[in-house]
Amino acid sequence: MNLHFVVTDEEQDVRIDRYLTERCENLSRSYLQKLLKAESVLVNERPVKSSYKVCEGDSISCFVPAAVEPEILAEDMALDILYEDSDVILVNKSKGMVVHPAPGHFTGTLVNGLLYHCRDQLSGINGVMRPGIVHRIDKDTTGVLIACKNDFAHQKIAAQLKEHSVTRRYQAIVHGVLKEDEGTIDRPIGRDPADRKKMSVNERNGKEAVTHYRVLQRFRGYTHIECRLETGRTHQIRVHMASIRHPLLGDTVYGPASVPFKNLQGQTLHAGVLGFIHPRTDSYMEFSAPLPEYFTDLLKKMEKL
Image (cartoon, rainbow, N blue to C red):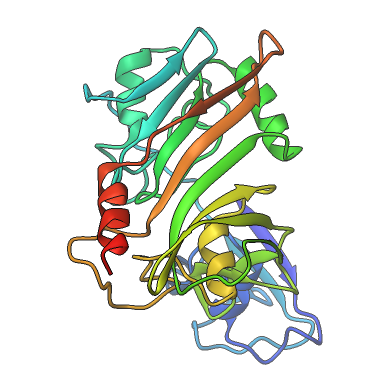
């Protein structure tokens, strides 16, 4: 893949590796630095170092080699299946399970398990790395996730997600005591300009993101809430709740670095309810997953605080 950019007046005087990171959202800064070192990036037809500061009018060419996708193996694993037919399968994802293969996680993912369970019956729209996957939830988020068995179902469900017509309700525990019984956070989310591995409220380059929340129970120093998503941005609930100074308990990325409860693995977030129009029958279907044991145990502990 060949990319080409021309530096504008507003973009000049920044390091080229940072400039390219801003322009190439799907490529990490470290990967772009490797391309620069391999002389796969040319400025005005000449290779430059990562420290080069771009100037107005610079013509930048960047050659990105095609990714070699590894073979994803089917694995026999226990899946908590909530519903299944010839078009869709709904799974209650466990904590710590990665949804689809990625560097560092090529085995033990939900996709590995789905490949074994569904055999060759998974949609191929998202490629060999993410067969059947039309949306995802984070590694440490539990709850309902839908996968599609064919491209027809995939396109139908993807359209509903794009139109924000899918029902998605989550439960979470946040730091602090929310004063209002309910509220709405309507703030755009995009890549954090200071840390490309994170998301942040980004008024300049973010995409629309809307989260509705309501209080389920208040504790000493914590609040149990339900969140309803209108949009589905990466880390949306985690970023939005942190933006109002109520980060999720256990979320060391967007909240406190120390976790007050022992053995808590990641954020306390559970995708409790998922509702959609079935792609084949056009009837509304809604599925729920019970709170995992670690979550209910935490609630019991908080009642005693």
